[in-house]
Image (cartoon, rainbow, N blue to C red):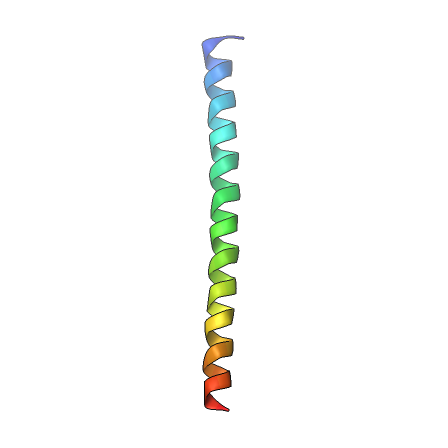
Length: 45
């Protein structure tokens, strides 16, 4: 493999990892927001 190919592969792997990580963080954020909203609704009832 040439240096360019290795760099391209590393970039693709890093980008894929970052995308997966941000998706996980986003999901966790949505879940925590939903949990907080549920707690607030329960407190109001």
